[in-house]
Length: 267
Image 1 (cartoon, one colour):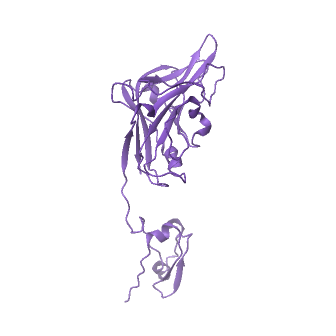
Image 2 (cartoon, rainbow, N blue to C red; image 1 turned 60 degrees about the vertical axis):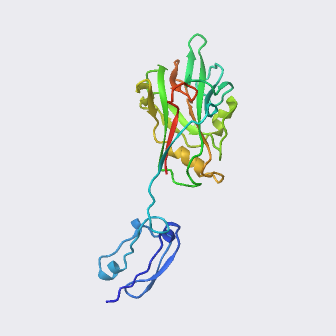
Image 3 (cartoon, rainbow, N blue to C red; image 1 turned 90 degrees about the vertical axis):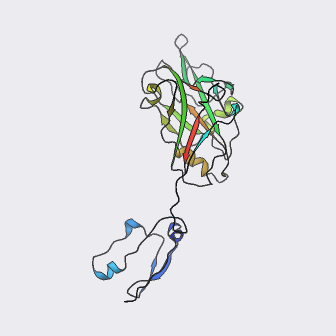
């Protein structure tokens, strides 16, 4: 029996190219761009079974690339810091006007509450990671921000904090409080501490965020992104607990220890 074979590059399947081939019954057929593994069926008769397509996954050479995990740390004192608002009556916030610093050793981030004036003050932290090894459009398999917790003050409930990134191709270190306004964040943001993970974590230990791959993905998908560029992540609170405060304290680059913020990315 003569066996007919046609080599179909995985790149053709990956990019939806139509592929013409001759099946084992000698008829010419086309695998079009809409064919998927879930869309292939047969009736059970021998003619249909002989026409079943076989697919493999991988790159254009038929190879499945391995995953690479890289951990990035803060490179210089200017690459992490914080800003704040003045005290105000609003229980939500998206802008910062004062208190910018990039030389703190440790800082409380979140929201403070003045029970005499019934006012709130919001604190945002930023963390700039440089030389990110991810090509433009690369698939981010996972990403985690780790911060070294040294304390926690205030609300004992599981109040939410958030992680986002400054939405830029190659973000420089912020130098003013308004450089951290929420209007310039990625659309993607990840909730952290809705399960009390930060609050209940032991002091003097790293606390690892939930997976923030959607945040990193939005940055590397930007047309102007290139491998080796920098990303600035932010840690912030959008709303205050009712008549209360919530303030985790984290270690920054300028502390004498080496427990600086870390970003782990797998591509």
